[in-house]
Image (cartoon, rainbow, N blue to C red; front, side, top):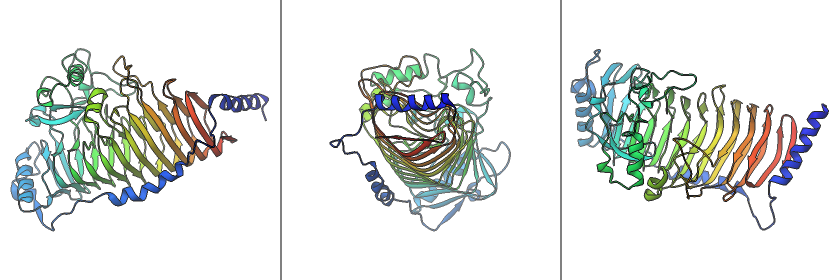
Length: 479
């Protein structure tokens, strides 16, 4: 064995012993008990129920003709279906252009195989403005492409395609910047969400607790609409469909509960194209999905800064199971908008693999966000390749300038079991805690990382336990 490697490994063990406070007898810390909640959580999730009645959009005037706007046909079909007690609104084979679609109680928007809904790229079609959310801040803005407000028993199902038609000519340039690898179409001096009267103005309004109905944006403010947004809804199913070319966040349940996302395939590499962002939401099951995105595959949210603290609704009881994550900033992420707190997140039997996937598991917050993350349970995870790290915890996350404040976040009770990694990138664990608030209680059990440049880059972590684990073919244990 290379002497330099022996020296480095010895130093690593010494580093671990000096950096991490050991578990004592009075520090009972059995995160395995957290798994007992998994079955209970899943049993609590209520699926929507629908009448066995079908309503075809063709019967209400829809036409699969290029440039023919079917907004009124969708509205009439959905309204009739709901008034008659509910059922399925059928989108048959063909391409149907429309503006935003608003779901009503007891309606299942069902896309038959070979169907495609093309959403208008004209911002004027997304009026009237609705009560929605942008990056954890509520406002009156363009309608999401598919929207429901205070509804029960709603669904989007089938084998068809939802096409947001966003690209470097539509929606994406409003980000106000391009990435290192992707041209989003932004030109210096062009419309940008970063202009003072746009996102910065919304942030200021939220800090000042301006009533939501006075936070009026829309035209000339360049804040892109979410794709699918159930807002204050219950009993939601999104199943089987493929979603492409999103303007912004893709599946975004807000203040909602009993949400099942099953077998959805997302392909969208635009800016802020998170695959799924449950926010202030409870009892969420995400299973059998494929995420190939321009941002986080799944990002669990709970409001930004003072807004999140005022609303004070945790995101909790969230299960991610049997999913595949390809490109993205992170596979399963918590934050950064998580000021109201996140608890009881379970990630089971997932595959993550791409040279363009930055991290497998990620938590991000800062002293402006605050909030508490308590209980992240990950097991049976197969990672092919990630670019930066297997586990990334950042309590000094920085975006949009100065992100420091007096709201000290907490991150605790993180459990990873039965993890195999072919190429972990730069670090197995990359953790940046705070001196005032150390990352607490992190357990790795049966974690095998074949290749990584450095095992750890860690500051301010307390109670790290590593058992039955190998990094770069070297056994590492710490109690």
